[in-house]
Length: 136
Image (cartoon, rainbow, N blue to C red; front, side):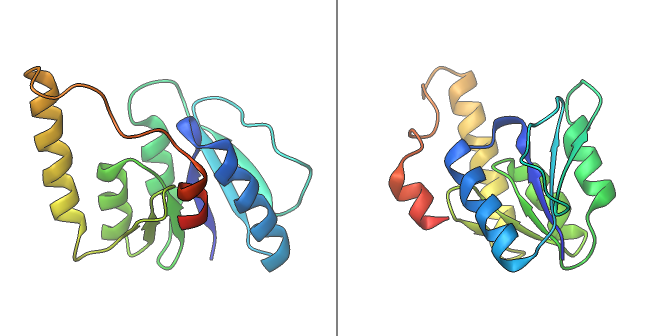
């Protein structure tokens, strides 16, 4: 198993937890982003730099992921894509995306985007805190 991280907006607190777990369990982790992500030296850690542009990092993750791998992302459409590839997807807040809940999460995401576009809802998710780190 390899863990892939959608690293463009990945919370630093979770990164530290993930780096410790990778070392302790000897699980390779690949951070994928549109820019280089500085990582401590380790044979288990790599960074894939995707070309600039919308969804380029997401596309690269989908190219790399294999059945049984884990992708950590807050991007619900990406989570749907990797689940369709037979991989697992986990939100940085500790929510596991599954074949049973991903379509509902996509619909909710689309509804909230429409409401924000219409000015009916402002703001985004709550700030990332200690409780989120514990859930992860």
